[in-house]
Length: 313
Image (cartoon, rainbow, N blue to C red; front, side, top):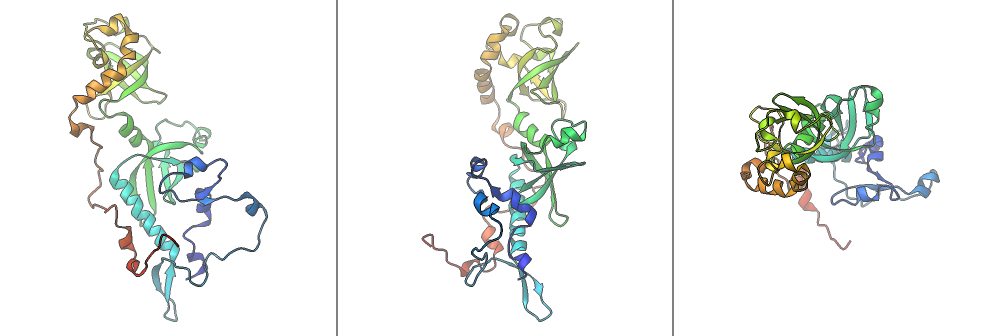
C-alpha cells in the first residue's frame, strides 16, 4: 500500500472534517457525524514527534487495486472509503429527503460543498434566489442551506445538487402555511411573493374569501403582508394559494383579517386532517430504479467476518 493510499482523506478534505471545538462543536455533535478535533496548540507548534498513523498491528480496511510488477497485491484504504462514501450518497438519494449542507467554495458556475466527504456542486441555476453577479454568488460561502441530490454519476465523479427542489419539497406540499407579500393585483386574483424568496404563487379571487367580491383591490393592496395556504393546483408546476381555507367562518377575511391570520395554524391542522395520506407522503425519487439496502455496508468488506470487535477495547 502506497503512503498516499493509506489515509482515507485528500488534503483538501481535511478542512471539511476539521472541528473547532470553540466554534463548531454543535454542528459536530450530530449522531453519525465524523470529525477531527482541531488542537490549536499542536497545530501552531509545527512538526514534532507523534504516534504513527499506521504501525504494526493496525487493522486497515482496503480495496485491491491490482498487482505490482513483482506480483504483490496493490491496496488502497482511501479508495475503499471513497466507495463507501458513494454507497451512502446513493442511499441518501434513494431516501429523496432534503439535507443541510455548508457551502465551502464558489466558482463562476455555482457553489461547492461536500457530502460524506465527496465534492458536490450546486449550479447557480438551481439556487432558490437568482444571483445577478459574482459578488452575490460569493456571499453564499459559509451558508447552511437545504439541498436535494438531483443527479449523481460515480464514474464521472459528478454529484449535482438543487436548492430549488429541496425548497419545493419542504414548502410547497399541499397544506403548508406560508408568509407572503402581495406583489401584484390582477383582475382574477393576486400574485403573492413567498417569504424572502423570488418565488411567487397565484391567489385566485375565488380563494380569497367565501364572500363574493367584485374587485381584488377592494380587499388586498400591493406590499400587504398575508398568510396563505398551499393548495392543489390544477395547472402543473404552478403554485396555487388560498386564504379562504383559513377562514373559521365564511367571509371572516372581509370583516377581520387579523383574526383569520391569528387562527391560521389551527385552521391548517384541520385542513391537513382532510388530506389523503398519499398526498402528504414524501415524493418518491424519480430515478430509484435500483433499491439500495440501507444496512448493507458490511457487505462491501469481503473479509468483514474475519474480525471480532470488542466494545471494551
